[in-house]
Image (tube, rainbow, N blue to C red; front, side):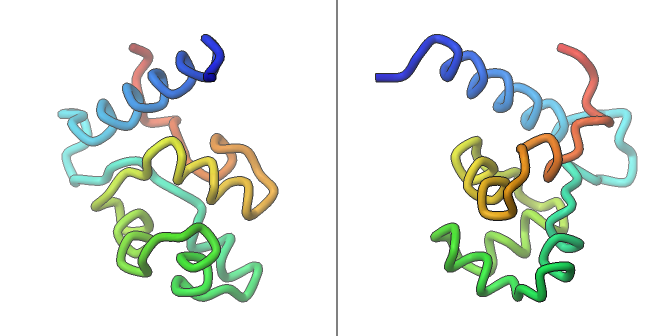
Length: 99
């Protein structure tokens, strides 16, 4: 059973991610930025290896890295946990306005 805090965190992340994707102030089309490429390079990890570790396709990792896809809360958590970081350390919410 999920706690109220878990549900709240999931809802907030989903709102932030949706807002980042449709942000009209973002003229160049960038969405939620990540540090995944840097983390992979630092850890000498391919997209395929990361994808296998978090149980998604390599294409999913590619799409997240180039900003064509925003990871679900569960996937964001898995990626962050894999690198031993928090979601906020992997995904950059600085361009997302407060809701």
